[in-house]
Figure (cartoon, rainbow, N blue to C red):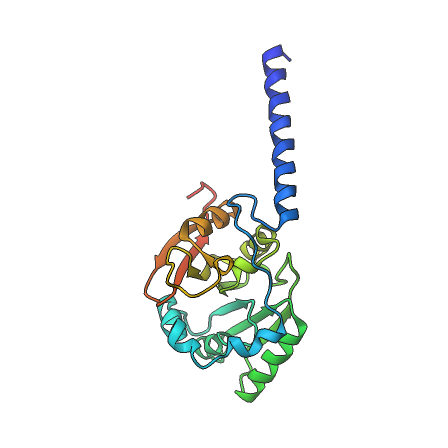
Length: 234
């Protein structure tokens, strides 16, 4: 090997080692290694009542959000970070008895609350899934849609979660994030619970997705629709 090529290889190895060190430090500090965004942390079962508060419908327009997604009857979808099931039962109604909803959460007690809510509503097309901080435990290549409502910003291992979710989508599937607008200072949410479109794009796209559409019709939230990136990078 000539000296110039040897020097380049050494420099490349040094750069990779430094990058790993930077990423490790970022994870230890609870911030995203690409954007520096601080992870918000997961809401526990104590927040279940807040998730179903009466004013949430006026604040977030959940039905309008789902209308914008055009979810087909018979679709197989996942509600990641489903909590008490506020969006789960709405998804279940839209996909109908021929469809299915995987309701995921990492809090067993949240899933207990969700199951009770589904029973009270006589909903039978929902399957609960206890996930992990780095893996939602969803079936592989099976989903038409993965919905994350005010959830992505809480992930402690967002890159690993995105890789697993990518593997769970069908080729034409969609990953949809609803996130409070960090660009709008009038949105009354703590800063770590809001995201900009640029942040979401910078963090999600490197994991095999591309931002296909941004919908800004909701009062406080972005609707960010990601699709799988083609093998040629599109």
